[in-house]
Image (cartoon, rainbow, N blue to C red; front, side, top):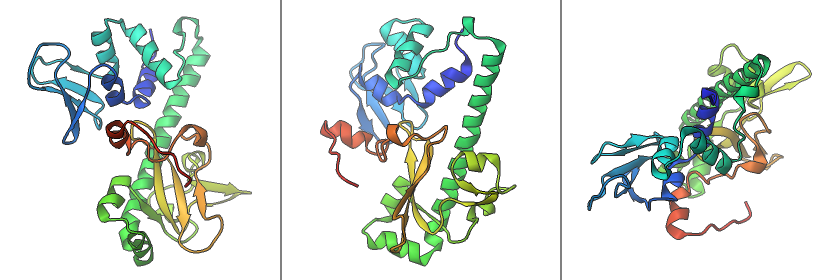
Length: 263
C-alpha cells in the first residue's frame, strides 16, 4: 500500500492539465480546459479539466477524478502502476512500504506535516504582501510606473513587503516561529529574528501546480542586493523551479515554444 501522504504530495507536484493533454488535446474554455471525452463517443466537447481543482469531469458520461484516476482509466493501469508513472514524470521515488519500519514511517509523516505547515505560512505571507501593495503609494507607483496593469499585478500575485524589522508579526503570532524560520520568511541572526523581506516588491514563486513555495523580492531604490530570493527550503529549490512557468503554461502550449531570456 502506498502511503496517502505520498499520494497527496505527488498530486501536489503534478499538473493534471499537462498529464491529460499528453493523451487528449485540450482547448482553453474559460477557467477550464475542454475536449471530447476519451471515455465515450461524442461530437461536442463535454470533458472538462480544472487546473485550479486539479480534477477532471465529463458532463456526458460522468467520468471524473484526479490525474491518477485518469491515467488508470485511460491507460488501463492499476493504482500502483499509475502512481509510478506520474512519480517518474516529476522525479519522485515511490516508497516501498513493505520494507519501511515504523520509525521511517513516522519520519515521513512528520516531514509531510512540516511541508503542509510551511505551505500555509508562505501562502499567508503572500496574501499579506498582496494586501500591502495598494496601501503603499510608493510601491504602487513603482509597479504601475513600470507598466504593470492591475490585472497583471493580480494575475501574478505581486505584492509589497513593508519597511520595518517584523511586518509579518501583523499576520503571525507568535512571532517568530520555527515555521517562519524554516520557510525562509524570517532570519535568525545570532538570536535576533527579523523578516527576510523588507521594503521590497514581492514576486511569489509557484510550483507547477500553482502552490506558492517562495519569493523573489526587488528593492525600490539603489540598495543592495537588488534582488533577494527565498533560500532553499523543504518547499523551495531555486535550481528546480522556474519563475512564471505556472502562469505561462497556456501561452507555452499555444505557441509550442519557450523563450528563455536574461532576467
